[in-house]
Picture: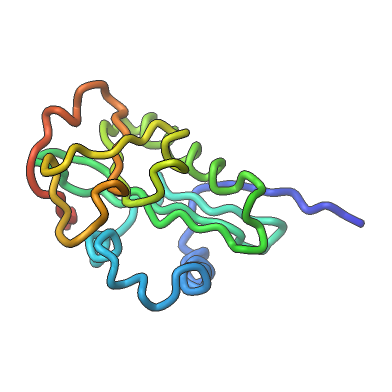
Length: 166
């Protein structure tokens, strides 16, 4: 039996349809009602910070990163991070996260936010945002609103609304 290699590369325009199908399978139609999705709505993700994973020619994972305004300064909103259920538990999500975080560092970004599972994202350095410090444009479980400082102390300098950068 032949083993196909896993590749991770920046997302290309030709990946969009397959990524949308992957999001549909993973999150269903209710994904559009989530606060993080509404924040990204109408604001394009940054292809230089967004990655796709393939096994052969089959798309098995994706992470997108969207520029935002966070408490009066620039930031990034990570998500969705999606791995095809048939390929979960193989480190694909972690590899996508590491690629995206490293790209954000290399491009000089200071802050990444996301709404997600705190125990999963803690291994990448994400910590809960102090309640009331940054305010999302809709409801979210405060324990799932997380931040990663790429520049020490930047989160303490930010206060107020998180909004799409249009």
